[in-house]
Image 1: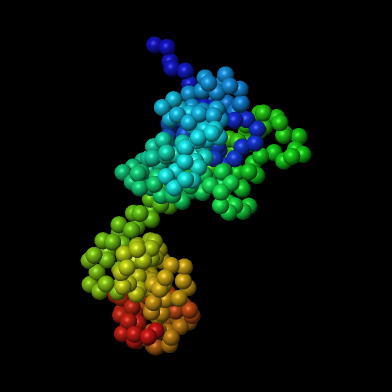
Image 2: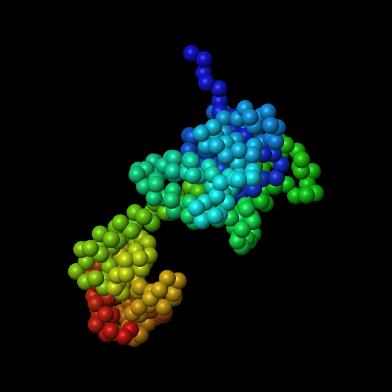
Length: 314
């Protein structure tokens, strides 16, 4: 049997941007491809004949037709999102291959079933931003944004490497690897947050007191509380050193305040001094700003939270 030819992926030559670097990373993940030159070919060119021969052409070619592997957005009448935001090449590729790329990243974590939800959040929080910046819409990210970091891989205007195809291609691969790393970590973070929310919802459903959220591990818990509108005042959870934390809930997202700070007489105390003031054996410390404290046991942490609620005024 004659082996099938390696897929040919084509994008434009010269300076690259976040959208083409990210689109290439997404395609490799979705299609299960390794390094360029091993199981597929990557050609950066503007030669119409090479573009026409591509298995997939992205950010070049003047055609958007997913059925034939064409993902360009520069032509007149290029597709837009329902709200009118123009797609970039990354956005077009993501619509077709984003869920598969996400599933490939989640599968080793045993979370492939979360692919649709995670991919949708990536689209809303990452891909849309790439679309907007690439099309010159909305504020720029600044030097530390992903688009700016990718742009830095391009040779400088006075670099001897400018115009050298091999050097520019290597820079593109390095930039694409950066975007892949960002995508990998973002997918993992969203998976963890969604998994944490399921744990938090289950804990709240069985709570003896809806004001106390008791967890078996330290995990992201505040966002589910906000989203569900629960009356949580404190979360209680263990940390690796064996202690149990008592963390106060802020009144709103991004706030450094607390719905109910730990009692003022406890502020900044540790060990025996704290035990003497609060009357709870096993109390370890309370931060001077009263947003968090700790105890040696779960029961002691619960006692601290209950005592704080009994004061009713922090």
